[in-house]
Amino acid sequence: MADGITRGTTPSITVTVPMDLTGYTCYLSIGKKPRFPYFTADNSQMVAEYGETSTLTFTITQEQTLACKAGKALIQLRIIDGDAALASTTAEIEIFDIVKDGVITDEY
Image (cartoon, rainbow, N blue to C red; front, side, top):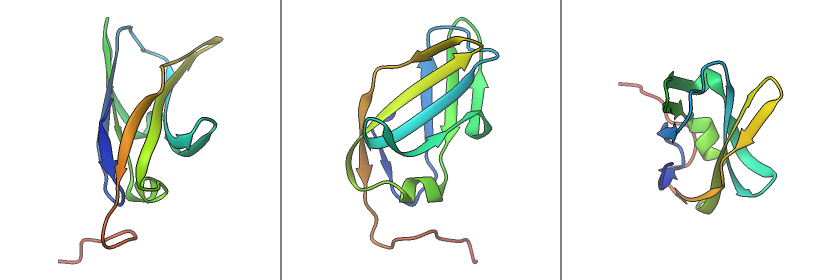
């Protein structure tokens, strides 16, 4: 998983899972502490390559990264297919701050 993301940006976070996740619903959450995510991205924000090893790439929005506070946070992948639900171990991720806060737009 990613080592860090910057608030107010649109990073892509890639997760590699050693199993075929075809048909699974996937949730990637980042939060300050367990059970309190800043946001959760799902399949609608994901591009996946399935096979014996699946590669999931989540594209995070400016709004989602702006919901994060700078500093250390936790990241975790949860997946479900029918009654089979699994979760990765949590990993630490660094949230980097920005000078100009808020959503920026392309005006030129």
